Image 1 (cartoon, rainbow, N blue to C red):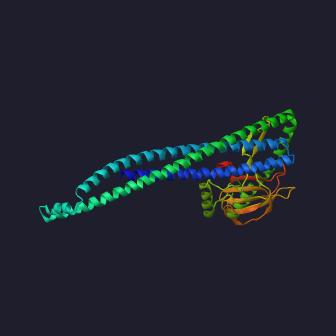
Image 2 (cartoon, rainbow, N blue to C red):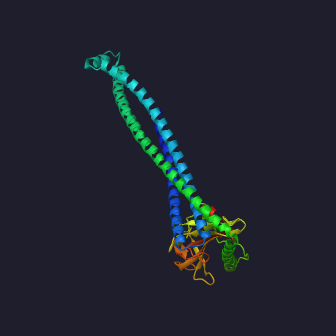
Length: 400
């Protein structure tokens, strides 16, 4: 029973570790994809001689993402340390049990040797007082032989388990050293990026007024489209409610089907798909001081996600295309997907893959992402609304 309990405990802990490692690996792949995209974006911004502000922003994002990777590597290193300790403890317990088994087995071997002759076994049976006692002695002899055989097998199995655990320990220690090595290289690169960033910031601060005007100009363009999206959503709510007998201009009148879909959408908070296959958030949700020119505030009702050229936007969850609108004076579209009382909004779509009224599934492509009018980069504007109220997409999208 002790051995069974130990094995169950060991494998339960390994399953738990395995699940955590799986989650870490998924996050690592996402971060590495973001770093890859950031490197591409930085390379392009240098070759296209884009604004110093854009280059600093990209470097700042790369530093932030790289720091996340360092923290993740440290988590994995700590996890491996716990696994190594658990395995070492399991090996110590198994060795103690093997020692006890061998001692018990030795006693049985000696006893078996003393009574090994056929004559001794027969005399043992014939000396029984009655048939019942003789039968019990025969059963005892059989059980004794089986038990001795089982103990020999158990010693073999536990010896094999120790050998396997020792091999696993070797691999785990090797993996941990590899992670620490990668972290040292990553930290070195981080320091290099920080030096470049500080040099560029110094350049910006020398002409602060010029960059203030650039930031404010871009903010004005973003705010103009944000206001347009708000207006379109209010109009859509009023129009939809008029059809189903509702009077509110700020909340959808819900059908049972819409309520069910909205509840499912809500249940997936923090687990929704990214609206792009690969990319990184270049501007987060909400109001904040500019990362470089601190005296200027920027605001966004959604997030801006930079991605690669000709990338597709995809639905973050099942829904219906409720609206498609072109951005004035551009050839770019805004697509609205309705999920009950929730809306996900995709801005800067250059080529549509859907039309109003289409039902879409999670991760289904809704169109090709075009160049943003403020900086010429391939950028998706992404928003989430509950009725007419904005939501922070980072609270809804997995690991945003």
